[in-house]
Image (cartoon, rainbow, N blue to C red; front, side, top):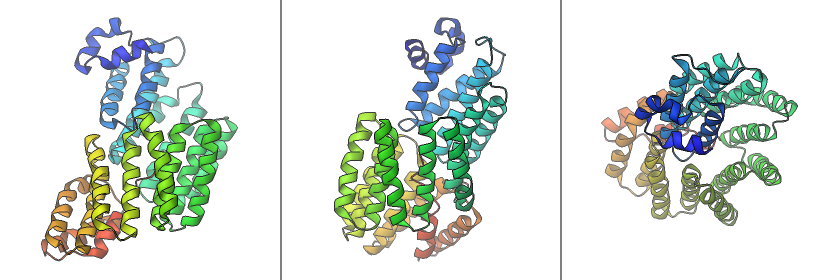
Length: 350
């Protein structure tokens, strides 16, 4: 692991020339780098993407001698999978798909291809959640869970259940979603998996907040923040602040809600998650309209539009975007389009 840390601490432009010194072709170094990059996905996704791309290109050309069996192919697939996951978190969905295609191509040559493909399938399914292909998620998630369970990959099976819970949230079935995330919370605690526990708690914050259940939402938020701060997971912290903003909004405290949303925005901005920043700008704009601050709301929407343009959405989302853009030009904001567009931003997938 020390060799991996040294490699990642070395400036990217210097690494290739120091490859022998940094032991970049040794499986132990590459395995450590993969582990470190995965742990940084929800704190520094842009940095993770840059590093994953470096290792991918380094291993790809010229052909490196890594290990004795399929190690080169495995690490190429793994770095592509990490790169695709980082792109998904950054709402760069077309790039994510390209990286996932690369991962699939390399995993075809690995001995443990069933497990590798299953992990890749999870990321592709998470992408489908964010693109609101809910029927397909509900059809495929149980099959993927079964695959993980046969492979005795308990953590991955539990993560798939998150996707089912998220679909229930989006389908406006909060009671069923709460039951699902409570079961996931119990499973994560039994496994001692803080990452999954924090994600389950964060989703419970958002669900209870949406129902105006202040005591339950605040209790879940306290526990979630303890987990995320221990893990130094800035994405998790930001999402908890988002959930608290939702609670304050439901409770009729718009100024305090905006303050909570701004806290989440600052976190997302610093780690490069422009899609989430834009989504929160739309939420804040809606609240500003409630406060009769139409011009401030218009500025929020105009600031969000460039990032929204970069995010590939389903046709219905593009239609809402067009309506919103036209209404902003006319200085009378279409609130229906504003709220509909906000619904096309995912914020809960693992």
